[in-house]
Length: 429
Image 1 (spheres, rainbow, N blue to C red):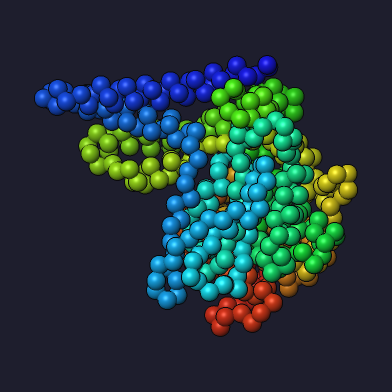
Image 2 (cartoon, rainbow, N blue to C red; image 1 turned 135 degrees about the vertical axis):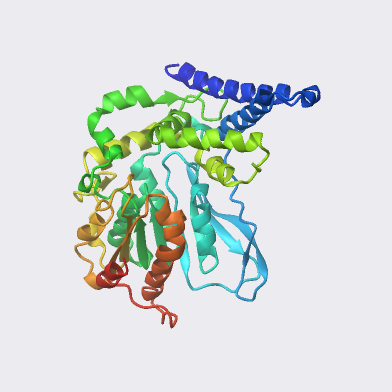
């Protein structure tokens, strides 16, 4: 079948590089070589160790690694991961904290489906879990989904979000990060028109491309340069025979990883060179900063071809969300139908993935929403990752988001909380 051989060749190359690394490590750590003073032997062992780990983690889904959370009583409370809704292309997970009184803040954290697993938001989840009852969208690797399950494009993705919001009820606060931002906005608008009583209380949009043309980046420029035919020919392959999704057309994770690394090739090259030296000197550990980051960064998943291509064509090239022309099953979804869901946008001043201006465009689309229910924040000096998982998130953005949730929860907010209107949040930035 067309493209199947290419997919299998790519997997074979990954497997071979992992084997080469393991072989180099095994040979260079042979006990007899311990008598040698030749530094190249230790360097070879270090190179092999880093090489093996690098290529091995490309096909492994990272663990959530959320074992417990400290409660207000000072005790550790174990966390259970419960599947609330199970679907072929993604589940709704609940991080249920044992022996803890129910919290008023119920949060749906919408994870991106843009090449990495939902575990990319692990640190975001952990920081929210202390003060919130958290649910997360856990998207599945397309290579593991049989062809018999059918297609999955941006309309299906949006309807998944609609169903998840309905399941959780109207007292939910939605936080969408990066790629799903425009679709979370569309899902909320869909509910506003079709099932108003199921709308969430608030919607926080963090670093997403609502209007990609508002501030061009390398990502938007790429979408403009290539035609859909060129993109399909270059990026789409069929899953090989090793996986359950054999024959499914996908945008392979390994191919996506090449694009991720090429955007900052020099930085990644330097990081791996330094890690090899640390391993050779015996200064590295299994969970050091390098491994913590790359265990997640290198773990990639396949996307269905229809989801990837429809994202590029409809959101980036045609700007359907930005123009308020997005349709689901032939019916237009009017963003202006949102009249009572508070909407907040968060952007990073140094974001080179979704530049400032792309996300805040959502507020202009909410024509039926009063200004008192709109808020925005521009975080100085923050890049893309920093606004949802880095220092900026921990110190500045998370408190603002919690205040925004409290101000729009329908209950009397805590004493330290205060209404977060557009002017107030801009002043904080």
